[in-house]
Image (tube, rainbow, N blue to C red; front, top):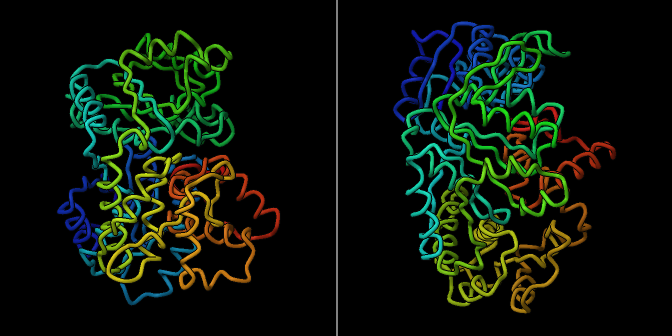
Amino acid sequence: MQLLIIGALDGQVGAASQIAMARGAKVAHVDTVEGALEVLRSGHGADLVMIDVIFDVKALVDSLASERITVPVVACGIGTDAAAAVRAIRAGAKEYIPLPPDAELIAAVIAAVTEESHAIIFRDPMMGNVLRMAEQVAFSDASILITGESGTGKELVARFVHRKSRRASKRFVAVNCAAIPENLLESELFGHEKGSFTGAVARRLGKFEEATGGTLLLDEVSEMDTRLQAKLLRALQEKEIDRVGGNTPVKVDVRIIATSNRNLEEEVRKGTFREDLMFRLNVVNLRLPGLRERPLDIDALASHFVKKYSELNGLPMRPLSDATKRLLISHTWRGNVRELENTMHRAVLLASGDEIGAEAILLSNSPLSLDPASAVVSSAAVAASAAVTGATKGLVGRTVSDVERDLIIDTLQHCLGNRTHAANILGISIRTLRNKLRQYLDEGIPVPPPGEAERPAF
């Protein structure tokens, strides 16, 4: 994790930076807001910016938004200055860290904002075979196409390949091609020159240059517009890119990993994806099996998520009952690991007694489900959902749409405004989430502003 600090290091801010480094963060330091913007424009990048409240937090946040630099901002200041904390949050800071710094608080903020846990939990031989193949090809610079259904862990495997590669000491840069509007994705990938379009107030290096020497992940590459696919193909073939508004090609050295939950051959037949680009990306194909194809992983992952969310919510760690295990294994898991994670998060909150029983498992037929296509589940799940009278008592008298709205907005706040992360947790597509948020805005309902992934889109 790369942390960029704005402020003097001769006091409490310096102590905070030392704590962050002790927690594994790489720390860079600048003295001014403009200096921070220069660092971010230059392609050095950061996963988190920490700014002392003596600086203009609003000016930094507004500049990042206008230049479409997506990085979360955390403010820090003397703990007794409540007014400064309020101003910082209102200005757009995601969190406020009081000084002198607390080690556990800094660790929690870093974990919440950057989500740096990328461990792959598995027991099933089918997943083991995929990871062995991934490790075998990781040493090369060959492009890799990772395919699989939504929620199977494609980005985790991409990070696994990067960690096992000779580029591991360099940056891993991910771009969600489905989450960034088409008119912005070109600049995001290739960068732009000052004045090349409205809002281009300075030269900015794109993700290709940020990832030089390392790995660039093109997540959901099948969502990319065909015009931009042609420019991407040239970049892969020539190992050089053209910034938007630029006249001189720029040499780049990146290892490309792409992911897709679509059948690219079918997309080629439909004319929505270039065949030559597909062959260029698909030197090695890693197909991730759906969760239902690796049943041994269900128990391991369920226990992992129970532990994670029990600790996160300060609740006792309860084992899964035998009935619960049978119920989980019998489910089809259309949302795969992401759906299982959401299910276990709910179960941790709803469970009572010494075990997590079947009554705490709300599967895809639940009234709270946001996926209208998920309509058929086992009768055991229906009975389990009906039994949670105590946990759902507070929902009686409210409409499903009201509960759904509150769940979406609360999840978005939990994700610090990050649309992509919220959609993942909710088990819905980013497009579905955007449509819901537009509906709420049209109805006059406040919606948390965009976070680190899709500014300025919903």
